[in-house]
Image (cartoon, rainbow, N blue to C red; front, top):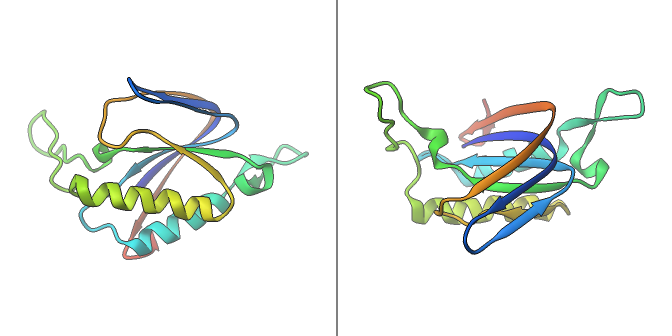
Amino acid sequence: MKIVLQRVKEATVTNDSIKHSIGQGYCLLVGLGRDSTEADIDVLAKKIVNARLFSDDEGKMNLSLLDIGGQILSISQFTLYADVRKGNRPGFTKSMPPEQAEQYFDKFNDVLRSYGVEVLTGEFGTDMLVDISNDGPVTIIYESQDGKVI
């Protein structure tokens, strides 16, 4: 499982049927690979909600999303598993099949919510416009395999 986390002042996702916006928090681009497990979901959700990426009164990144009452905009992003080794067109055989990926994506967001975080999402499997006001900029890549952060 791969997640690109961006600390944001605000973020919005829109398409023909949705428009979801958050204020301060994280925009997560969530990639699920064929070998992603439910243990990966649990370990990365815990790691993300407890990550100390917000500034305290002294300007040090010392506060978590939970500490500041931040929100999450979570976007499914199968292209994080693109294979670009051959040619110019990426392959996506390492991505989890869509039916299973949607279930895992929903479960991941439910686990985030279980920590008391407000989580809004894009619409799985559709083209969307994601507008991110990256704060910092702070961008961190999280990966897990077999329930261990790598």
